[in-house]
Image (cartoon, helix red, strand yellow):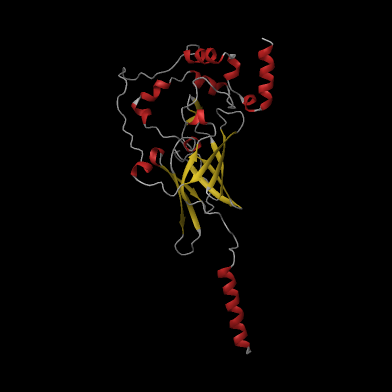
Length: 289
């Protein structure tokens, strides 16, 4: 074999190995049409949480007072009827999720992961190009500003610049200073979504939630992906009137306590209520009342 022929043979074998072998930086493809399984935290996510129930949330006194003052009739106001769930909450409810990739046409390097969420017709853009997060003066949005990176097959996402919204739909607030870290893990037709929110205004500890998605390629049709919402006057009110409760006047609290025959402290939330030890302490306290 001549030296030139040996050189070309070696080059051919090297190219073949590159083309047929496993990529050096293999990443999981999350693309597809996904639907959440709603068995986790079902009462909170679908029928909705009970009013004045703050158990399991590491809230502070400011968040507690905000929720005690909240009247669900506020959602009848035209400016609240079509208000979007922000990214820390929008994955909790019923929706269809379509994930797609945006790649550089020349290099095929992954630039963005896009998540279209049918509820409120929202599109989350997760930048994968290593760009930094903007400064605090950049306007906040419903979905916030998200950057992602791969850790093996796990997609890790950090989101900032999120608008003010809520942590639980019974009035527990989330401030616009909140930040969220997420992990998306795909295993075949199942995807696990784990999120942790840190809110220096209303939370004393990070709050972690989890959802399971299942792949469903048959989700199709306009009704599956659109969310028409038109604000109307549902309840006639004097202009400027906002439903609310003054301190000590929220009747929903007493109704909750009577229905479950449990002390007030059991529903007031706080970091301690997230842990199993609190249940044992509370049961002992109840037996000694």
